[in-house]
Image (tube, rainbow, N blue to C red; front, side):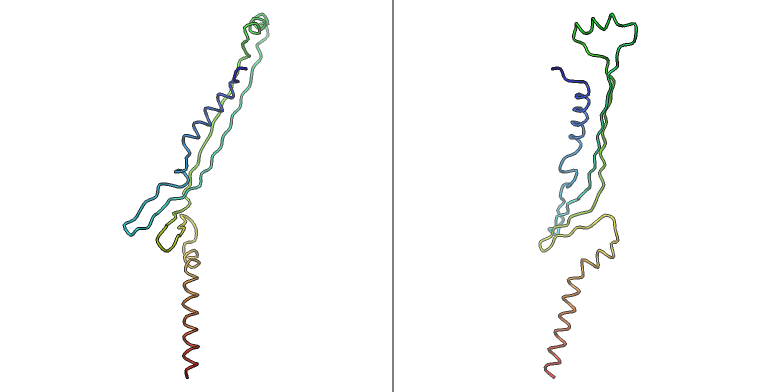
Length: 140
């Protein structure tokens, strides 16, 4: 069975999208800093694809050609199209150092995120101060 023209359109569009998108589109090439940290860009990739087509019947008055076309095995005229699109939006950077891994977002409330990141350190310092005060009061 012969391949339908819409299959060719879809295959061409999908192959083109596949060439544009690879793992380095989502997770970019890592960059090593002089301090030994590695910075990896992270992106959000969205893609869309559509294809459509129609076969047209011969116009009236061409009925003699229709019988001839059926004998030759040719198909009715076909018209169609396909298309696709890709959107790449940076999300942030993954910073990998020897003692921690952090995601630095591109958008968002940086102050609030920084406070959330520092909350464990703040809790440790406060609990250390409370423990020191308790131990100094027990001595007195």
